[in-house]
Length: 256
Image (cartoon, rainbow, N blue to C red; front, side, top):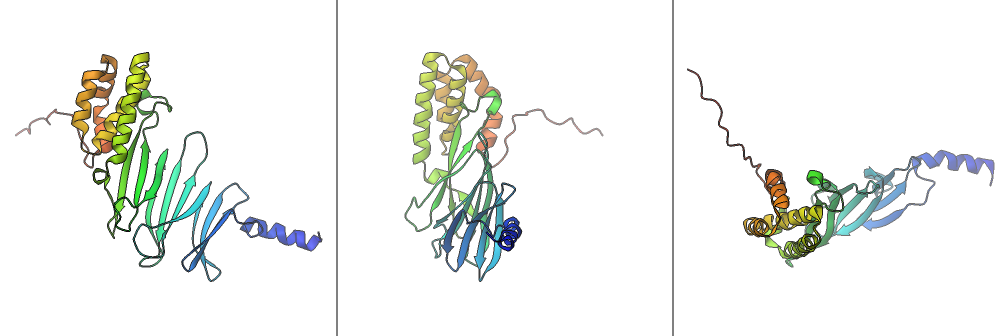
């Protein structure tokens, strides 16, 4: 190759222009490109008329189109994964409705959006998500449970619609309950703790927390019951819109 060509390629490489894009797709009147960077990062660019209108930097980026607002064109979902053994996922959701804008930005840690599906047939897809309680209260990652939550878009913002669509949580409750009973047979204390918590939190987000707690208090060994009760405030706060406190100590009376 000519020396002048090598020089041009060397100059363009830091700009990401000499490399073939890792992914491209058309999004309405825009193009989307994901490019690799020399320092190991990746960048997603939304382009029109040859100009970058917005960019997102990450490590392992992936772009897809999903229908969330019910109006064409579909929305752009960017997923970034940091790499490593267990972490971390970040999601960005962009729309063209009302101009190019960001509908959602969420750093999930482990878990994240598992599926985007229209669950009620209204033309707007719901976000089916997983939140993982990584290493919660001494659990190993393998025993750390997860909770499924569903978010719906009402035309202005996302809201928690998990109680409207409880099917996934009921499935998870059954799965965790079966895992708990298997761990109890073998005497696996950590397995019981993780599966008991998974059963409870998936019940809590669909309004069945009291019944789930009652079942656990009847069927869990003392060590597991104590662990659940010691961590009850943190468990409830993780699924509640309002922070809960079990501190019943009143402030000292005012001195006159």
